Length: 150
Length: 135
Image 1 (cartoon, chains in turn green, red):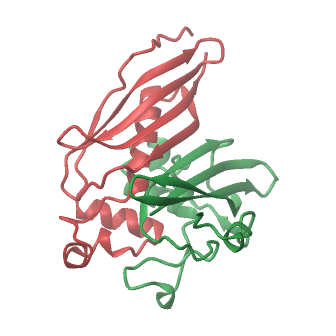
Image 2: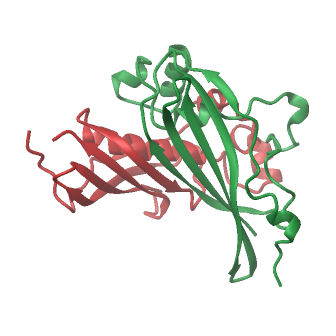
């Protein structure tokens, strides 16, 4: 019997609200130092390092929205019957570099939910795609996150 | 320019020993308040970790850096994928590296197998990157 109810599966395709962020040199420099970059163009903030978008589109939440372990609840996700998160993965496609002054809009979509049988019971997999587009309409980054719950 | 790239070439390795300041900076840059990354009593007593947990995307970033530093300014990252299989902790000695697993001289596209390994040699974060080199 599947742990995925029709209600859960109906949330596939759900989109989060588009979020627009302005890229600044200061923000790129902070990220570059924080992530241990060694290339000058990143440290000087001329171009964003490849995973800078993770920081740029990390949810900015208020204190009240944090759970006791310090994370925020992802409003895009339905309430899953399994809650223990296992290793997930990221697949990122790069279309165009991110530079200071760019105005970027990111939209997250819950693109898939599926089940597999693990050794000790069912596993739920879900996929969230983040599409990042510049204000001239050019795609910049497409990121697919896969997470596993047991 | 001809590219001297062969399948099986090893990428230059980098040893990272993330400390609490690295974890502070990285989580501050993200606005990530997950306590397993900065609150040692919480990480140990509540979650049962032996130390402060190195954030997964930071190790993913190291894989991208390894690919780009190998390309040393003559290439662009087209694609990067990674997963976080094992936890790593503040103070761990982690080695980042990889090998060329495919190369198309026509397009200049190199596919790289990447890893972050811990002191025991176990792969903490495997990954793959496609870098397009200027031909």
